[in-house]
Length: 66
Length: 414
Image 1 (spheres, each protein chain N blue to C red):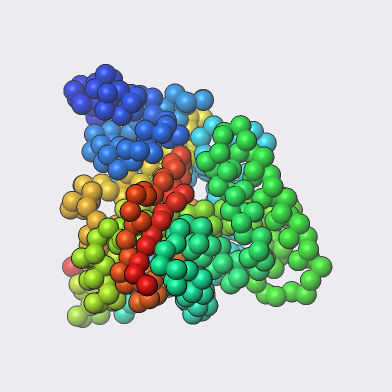
Image 2: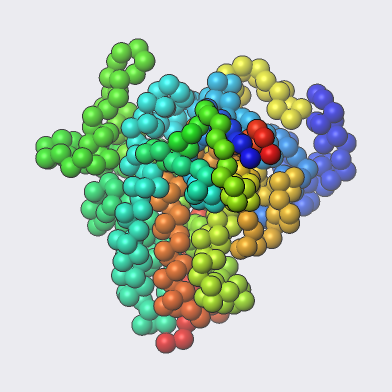
């Protein structure tokens, strides 16, 4: 699974990293460290990643390749 | 007027007389956040609006709109170019109230400040405050556990958020908390003509505090970061008034809001022994329960934006200069995005709520608030596992663009 984190709409809610800490990393501001980029979801972490994507109040994370 | 709006107008449930008999006024065409009926019928009103009225209008003062669905609230909150925060977040803003940075500004000014302030409130930074906050939770419980009863707001709920924020972040003496709480509360819920005066006292106090800190050695804390300031796009340095207003904004957010979620969660647990027992049996559920309580009990009902151009929102034509409130409280219970949104389900997963706002102005204290709420439930349930609302009493709510509980009497066996 490959996902894209929107560069402008991530607002630092931190929900993605709370639900999927092995997928999403936060920077020192508490925003997604990979915003503006695509990342690969490690195998076995897909369900957690989906929960993190769902919980984002900004809908800032989209699935590029399921 | 497009189909969306026409459908609303044709709906018999939205007939003015039907609305007047149900809600005391035509809430689709003349909503009033300060109407006592909204306070009393809070849940019913939100549930109705999010399902039936994507947009309602108010004729109070110079008038304003409320936008109630999750998708529209998100779209507007993220589109800061069309929906500006620079004219303030409350409708019919009190005269003479200085604008609060960074909440009442737009990018790039807003971005400059947030980038400076965010590291002081990030998950990593506030994690270090968890133990001190947990100690304060216990210190407060110590003061009343032996008597078998408490008035939760004045003895716990109005204190802990202030302690957490003042002791760990702001460095303001906690003895001054009651004065600031009163200023913020009265400035929000008091008679509209008196609100600016109450805020003025808060400004004056924090202005003095900031000046005093200039005479002190640097601590490398949030206050020093504010003192250091930022340089705006046009090359000018942020003025003193902006720095004071940041302190006011942070204080306002830090003490006027979390209390409501905390008290509402405790109230719900007092009335639902089965939920309480589940959390006692498995404290790992508490974190998710807090997320659900935060969704369901929003201290910030709605915050506003000003249209920078003519724009259509869910079929309603808005004009440049119109004021539009984002009803976060309604958006967090949008049935288009969750099952049974009117029910509290502490096991609801991946809760997409907007209680901390949406868009670049997301509540900067959200990470701190979650720690306060989680530690409160964890310690409370350990020490006072069996409690209920004092017979013959009922909590008293107050609502405007914020919502709060003024009194919650609890009892437990000693």
